[in-house]
Length: 383
Ligand code: 13P
Ligand code: SF4
Image (tube, rainbow, N blue to C red; front, top):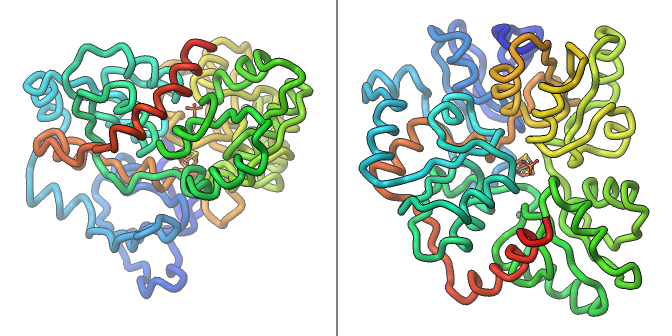
């Protein structure tokens, strides 16, 4: 349950030796690992005195050996990151856009927090000279495509996405060449090159609306998320050719454990992001994008919710609906963590450093940007 410190029962990975890593738990030292593992910041928020080190997140390509964390770091460089970030924001004439899956402290310094669609819209409208994107790479790329003359900073360039990585542009283009009659509606979680080869971009907020605008005689190819694609087929009754991609976070939710949780909390509504697999979605009382899940928690008469999406959203849910009980849906792995390992690469320290150094910056090929802008603009005008 939100707000309760992690313990060895709810987070067994804190207490046991880490597989294949050579690291072992030691008294007073938390080893942070595993796919979608608990972010160090989550641990420090609730256990400020614990020392810790991380042995890396194995599912991220080019995973680096991570630092001995936070206690040592903050002792070395005593910076009040929140204050320094706000100061730099004024100096740079910057806007900070943050996705709901970012850590709570990052959400708290952001100017705008939103889902993929809202952040794209805000990126398109901003007057700021510098856009600092606290999210993942494809989101920052989208902001850059919409603002080719502006500086777009991303705290960690390795913040990718399993959906984008599972849909390389060469394979996508070859697939499209085999189906030239299909209109391609592509989920925004993809690279700029894939966007440039697509007809229309969509997000989980507007996909259904966009699909309903395609003439019925026109066949549709939907990429890269097969779970979202299947959900949209069920919603619209529209057959679509699907790319076989998935989100590593939303695919980890365990039906078995969800069933147990629902038994323990019969009053709780199961709400889910459409990137979840079909058996989870079939059980959900409400399905929607991150912002619609947030709205639903605020507006629904229910007082308790089992939330089947990335854990970062719980921060805003707890802030905006403080009287509601929020229960994160458990993954199948023997661990209660459901952090996106890409989203959680961003930290306050890296956010501060990227603003201080004006780097890492998103630099893109102009022709790709020009071509990718067309299906993004179609999305904005159709939603
Ligand atoms: P939305 O914020 O559009 O619901 O997307 C969720 C997601 O997975 C972003 O990576
Ligand atoms: Fe990609 Fe899934 Fe992470 Fe979203 S939660 S950025 S879809 S890997």
